[in-house]
Length: 95
Length: 474
Image (cartoon, rainbow over all chains, first blue to last red):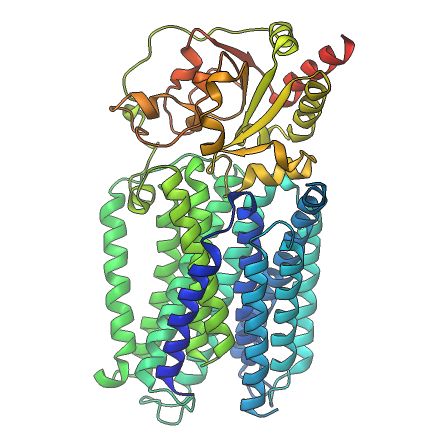
């Protein structure tokens, strides 16, 4: 894909991120952070691509290490965010 | 699956991330938002598996192990230990991005000195520069997060430490890193030997790990909300850089979203302390004991639980100001019990929450939510401050700098100008504290020396527990 287009996407995503976050109430800062932390585990996609059949042993080891770490980030991040938000939710209904 | 189809699915995944983050911004939709974003992640992972030539057995193994560890960590962590866990997850994400860049470098370096047989569609110089960026940011995120985790869990001590010559070391390391990254990116132009380029790459990896430690060592526990938010941002940027390495849209979009949101949180946290990011990062705040500011006249007056009981019994409005001490003592449940009893007694109870109370943004809100404190009782700093003069009793539970009136009336104080919760304007203040020592910043808290303030020494949980049983017995 065209490099300039990728940079274009990058810049637009930055502005989008800014607009999305700037109004979040401070009460939700922790779940927001752990939720976005889980999203940064998207590097798992890169880790998957790195584990190739034709790869060298070193390459496979590096790829699998990346994969394990990224998976912990993704799975743990989403679950713990959900656990926190489950505590927030009932009180939202009471209002 | 063709590249175009793959990209279409990635667009859907990106849209789910955007929607998810948006919905995380409101209490009513937050849980659903998190779920949507998880679906997006699952989609991105699933379609990636359709790439040709992947070793699916190893991938299944890796995902299996990671899932197991992630599930156990997420289920077992205590709510009070949330900052530590987020720090560790950040660090893992950063290291994963570093490794993705490393793996890509491995493929590239086996393609010959000028990398002409390396096919990714991007010029080698571009790919090399983003590889070095991903390794650099990922490495800093990893060791920085581990350092933050160690400080938060008390393993490395929570204090800010300035190493001898810290500034020179940090400047030196940053300088060498910058030069290494530029040389690495320019390797094809400089026609370096593959061995030399490889050596530079390993140097970048090693130095970025050192840089992460150097970044967080001078930062004390109370500034951790800023650091955690910043590391969160960096882990996103590392993923975005890795996305440029493998030219993958979903990594770039998701990484940049996280990078930006983390950055905004960082700025919000800095504003809540009236300090600049550079000051938080580089000043070694709290490391120098001679920065105490002028001594305070008077003495701290201890009180018994009984005294507090009589004051609370008679009070018609009470504000509870929690801080990190409440988290350490795991006192949130018993505090909620206290609030409930007081409410039943006809007392109006509110919680005043400072944006940087605790060790991560929103830390106190999570703990009080865990203890089932109703939303309506939680007040933000600006909303409660105007009401403080009409409050009968303010109970400070393990909070220190965020209620230090020196921030408003002593221009010589290092924290002068930081917005605080005006506990000193309440009629009576009870401060729960473990010992007589100064707080994290090493500052003397003027609040404790006021005539209206009484100190309740001891573990917050048992003190509040004793109060609760007194009130129950009435």
